Image (cartoon, rainbow, N blue to C red; front, side, top):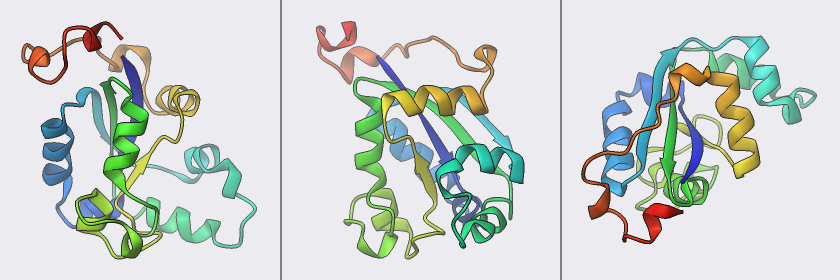
Length: 155
């Protein structure tokens, strides 16, 4: 099984979408193996968005991502990175397909409610940035056999 990181951004927290998003994650069958609320700061955002630090809009990202606490989740599932990214939709909510989190809940490219890791390799890096090993739990819900076929659970 694969792990991925999700961040419920201030635009989701402020709008009271935490429960809706978590319900959709669980309804899909992704397993929450780590979850916490935290206040981000410029230092962690410089690490997380290192590819954007030199862009003129980076200060705007810092302001929006520090506006409220965020909820960070570590999710587990077969092909969890791809599955959660597909659930998330394209970056700009105005262009995101209905049925995706962004398509259903946002109208912005920046205030786009959720972050999703873009590769298994980056997911490992991002999970380590936000969670200590003791905060990620290796468990399987009792109903896992009803989300996956027998052979898929061995992946």
